[in-house]
Amino acid sequence: MAMYHQGNRDLQDAFGTRALADRMEQRIRRPAFTEDDAAFVASLPFFFLATADAEGRPDCSFKGGDPGLARVIAPDLLVFPDYDGNGMFKSLGNIRANPHVGLLFIAVEDKPRRLRVNGTAVVALDDPLMAGFEGAQALVRVTPVDIFPNCPRNIPRMRVVEASPTVPRCGVDRVEPAWKTYEMFADVVPPRKA
Image (spheres, rainbow, N blue to C red):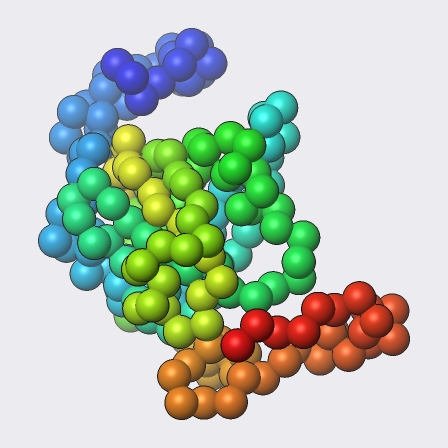
């Protein structure tokens, strides 16, 4: 089965979970987004993105915004914007070097839930879909390979107290993060593009 490699299988055998793992792949894994997946993804103001460079060195980042930050626009396509950040381009640079990605969507309020998406991604600097994301400087297109829910039992129940004031919003003046004015960075922070 494509979802598991020998390392997975060795541990499944060591813990007696091979049959359970196979059943999960058969019953809950899917290669395309459902309408429920799309609604869940669109309801969240954040997700976690795992990437790796060309040598396989991993990196994990938090991606935040308003609900609708990530959007399923077709059964085989999820998109999300890249906003002005710290200029390191760890995630997007990794995607350019190694297109394999993992996304983790977690709901922490009311009814905890999570969805994992593994697939491949491309970064576009001039994608027409960027117009639908206020403040986007790039767009990431993710083609899923494995989509599956995970047990939410250990997700703490939490509340979002306040949305970030730095998220780009239509008709609202942009707020620069304070660190961009720190003396150690101020002379190298490029001007924000319109």
